[in-house]
Every structure is written in structure tokens, then in C-alpha cells.
Image 1 (tube, rainbow, N blue to C red):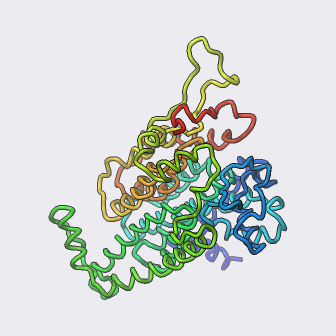
Image 2: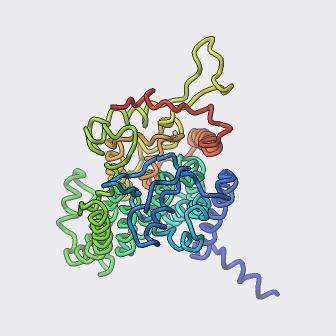
Image 3: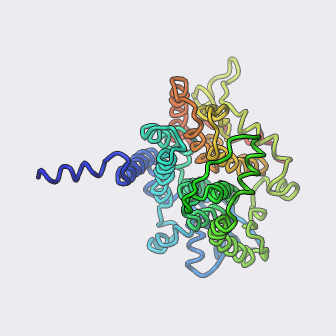
Length: 465
């Protein structure tokens, strides 16, 4: 008995790998418990928008189309019609994950897709903790282990990821899978340590949320840095500290070891190429279009199809309206003398609340004290999907908060960790506000008893055109 005690304590020894894994598993377990409780009866039945389960079922029956009309319970919501056949036009990787369980269940209706998504939802916060710890151990972050734990839990319960994680429906399932892949990508990309796994993560991200593939620039920056510093040769050169940012970047690129850089980038690109080839084959087989990004959203039978045909899926035309949603959409009170609609004290547009309103902790990103390579690489990675989403033909409707921010939220939390800004009283007040609104969204969104809080009029902010 006396010899067993030190052995048990060793599992939690400071800086040990087992300690990090145990903490990550604890985060996952906490997320599973809370998400499961908030999801409620979504854990016990299929969701009304179980598109990925139907896509998996189609493949299991040897076809690409649904084999008939969409199920009545889905209300015709977001199905693609092409040459008289119905298709699921959402990028397919989440359906790949569901295939074995759909096969075991026997039909999409017997598969509890909402519960499946909740089981996946804890991966992103847990992997984010491992990312932040890796940054701390490599002395690229000054945060403590406790800080890293808090930031991972804030991502889980103080960002729009919370309400996303408990929905289970097709749009939100993609975000859950995408966030998990993004966190794993950063974990494998740091130090360019696992280029093939990082490339595989990016490829699967493209097959889940295509715009998130732009975050692959994070690995490119890390690969160039490693090729310049050459730690594998025992040189460990320091990055240049003098000159303008552009001059220092040019010095690093020109001084990078070409053989190392090509080896890293080649290993990173190989699995991405395989995923792109699969997407090209899939889209050509279904729609006769070999473009890897032509998943068929232009064939959606939705009320705003006319604007897709007129402006395309991405256009500067949509930028002002999407900015209005992301930055200007706030709760509103009834007009003076008007009774509360549905007896609620305020209402929220179905376009969702502004990002700064739901998650004010992001304000701490604006003035980093010591922005280094990781901060810049994460910012560069976040800009790509952020801009593409702002140019998209849809604001994210129907949502509680700006759900498209999930596409780059992992990188925003990495930036918080390495910004050097003190997380003082003001930050934790903002964090408490974020937690309160995130919990409200998770507990009320798409729950019939709380439907009165949400306006279903898309024309309030985003008129059809």
C-alpha cells in the first residue's frame, strides 16, 4: 500500500504528459455532462435536420442522392434538387464519421444524431487545452496551467460554441466537427511537428467547412519558422529582432533551409491533395462539376435561391449585411406602450446577436502586449475564413449568436493565450457576461417553450434580394 501512493501521485506530477491528458479528459467529461444536460431530449431522438445521417445512409445504399424526396419532418429545409433528384449538398466529412453508427442503427431515423454530436463536442475544448499547454511548455505563452484550463473552459461555455454544441442539426454539427479538427490541427501544426496529421486535419476541415481550409496558413508560418531556426541541426537560430515586420519576414523566408521547408510542406500538402481529389470526384459524380468546392449549394431549394443565382454564393454584395449581423445585431425591447411579445422582456433576431455582445472577451485581442509569431500566424489563419464568411450569401440564419465565428474561434483563443495581456478583473467581468449569454443561448435556442425570444422575420436585418 505504501508503494502505490507515489505511483498514483505520479500521474498528476507537474509538467507530466499524464497530467495534461487527465486534465484534457476532465474537460471533455465536463463538456459531455453539461452539453448533454442542456441538449435534453435531443439526446434521445433524431433531430429534424439529420442531413448527414441521410447522406451516410445514401452511401450505405450505394448512391449519392436520397433515392426519393427529403423526409417530411425536415420541412424541405436545405436540400439540393438537381435533374429531378434530391441531394445533401453539405460537405460530407461529418457523414463519414456517422456511417458506422447509421449502419448499426439501420436507418437515419433510428440514429440519434444529436447525441452523436454532443459526444463529439468535448473534443475541441479538450484539444484546445493541449494546444495552450504546448505553447506554455515551449515558452511561447506566459500563461499558467490554470490560465490554460480557464481559457479552454471559456471556449466551451463562454463562446457561441456552447449553443452550437447542443443543437445536433446539420449546420451546427459541421461547426462541432470543424472546431475539433481546428484544435487538433493547431496541436499538430505547432513546431511543424506532425505535418501529415496537420494536413489531414485541414483536408477534413475542407470537407466539413470549406472556408476553414484557409487556416492552413498557420502551418505554413510554423514550417518557415522551423526551417529558419533549424533546431534539428542543433543550430536553434533566433528569429530576427531588428527591422520592420516586412524586413524580418523577408529575412526569415530567405534564410529558411529549403530542403527542410520542402519536406514539411510536401508532407503537409499530400493528405490535403487526397481530400481535394475525393471532393472533386464526389462533386463530378453528383453534379458533373469537378471543382472540389462545388458541393451543390447553388441547387438548394431555399427562398433566397434568387439571390444565389444573381450574386453567387460569395459576393461583396453581402458584406454590409453580414457586417450588420456580426457587429450590430442586438436584443431589442418592445416599443413604448407595447406589451411584451410572448411575455418576454426582450427579443433576438434570428440572424443572431453581434459577436462583441455575446463574447466581449475577444476585445482583449485588440491590443496585444507582445505579439509574436504565434499571435501573427493565428491572426493570419483567422482572417481567411472570417472574410469569406462575411462575403457569404447567408448570415448564419437561424442562430442565437454569430455561429460562423466558430470557424476561427480556436485561433482567437490561441491569440488570447499568447497576447501577453493580463487577464484581470475587467476580463473576468467580461467572461461572466459571456458565460451568462452563452448559457442563455444554449438553454433557449430552438427550444419551443422559449421560442418567443426569437424573431423569425429575416427581413429585419437581411431582406431577401
